Amino acid sequence: MPTLIRLFPAPVRTVSLTGLYLGHASTLRPSPTRPRPYVYSNFIMSLDGRIALDHSQTGERLVPEAITNPDDWRLFQELAAQADAIVTSGRYLRQLARGRAQDLPPVSTAAEYRDLIDWRRSHGLAAQPAIVVLSRQLDFPVAQIIGRLGRPLYIATGIEAPPEQLRALETAGAAVLLTGAGRGVCGAALIEVLGTHGFNSICAIGGPGVLSTLLTAGAVDRLYLTHAHRLLGGESFDTLLNGPRLCPPVDFTLSGLHYQEPIGVACGQLFATYDRVQGHRASPPAICG
Image (cartoon, rainbow, N blue to C red; front, side, top):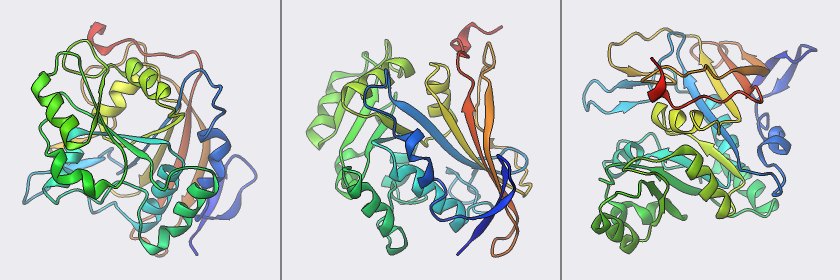
């Protein structure tokens, strides 16, 4: 069984990787009386900050194979297992339809993750969290993939989305959430609407666009970052946030840090947990000079 060295908080000691993030349930699954849902996000990134690179053959922007590994994937599954809903991007659905996504949405039904399905059921949750997709273009074949998802699918978009596209999505079996003034999604409105649907714990996994939408609304409570000790380079890539700078910056504080030695993995990695400093909220990036 893989082990980690807990570096923070003190004291330093060896702990099991399996179950590490399940131990965060008291934070990730707050009381239903909380004013708004608890939102957390998870990424794996290289030492030079890459979370996605263009695939050399397909051109699809994907998590680099050079940093993916089963141990990070296990902890990702543990985080997803605690969510009522998983927020992702339209790009993910398009990749899934073309067979180029990294995997089906969590929680994985593979045998090694069966304990996570059991964990959900023992806590009174559905076997799988709902999927919430943020999209302006609405250009994905919902009818083709909704059966593969095996759970409720929500499409969040703006109020100016073409009515015929919205009707087609609903006919295919998706629920539509109008959460923005134009074609895009407003993060604050999205979280409010998800709360009215009974989603108290939300895991955001969809890349820099999703993170930016939620972060600029002051909605992200916690970040889980796996820092793979490997440099990748590349001229076309995603990092945690793209686009305009945040004004003011959004502050986080380290609440947990675990080190995995390069034994059984190609390179060492750090598993870090960051909590947003309360009272810090980013204004919409459009106002930044």
